[in-house]
Image (tube, rainbow, N blue to C red; front, side, top):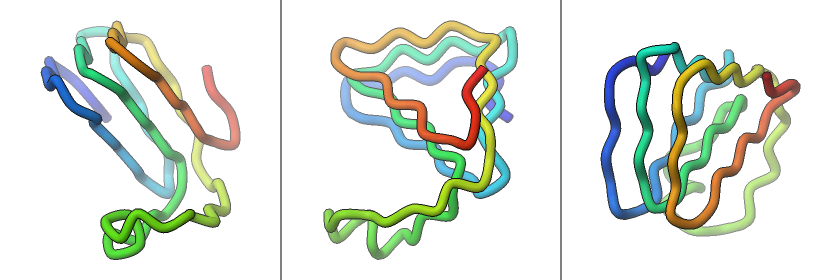
Length: 79
């Protein structure tokens, strides 16, 4: 569950196999934002290799997502 504020001029990634919930009080203001409803290996992610992700969780957004570049929401369902 994401609440409050996230500010960054870079890329911010949140991954959780159960999904990502952005509540109504959240403001995400970033360069790029990625939310993934899957189990992502830290080592594989940091290695920069292609990731084969079996999606297992949903993404639900009730907040405000602002990005200078890209917003990617990868999940079994996105609301």
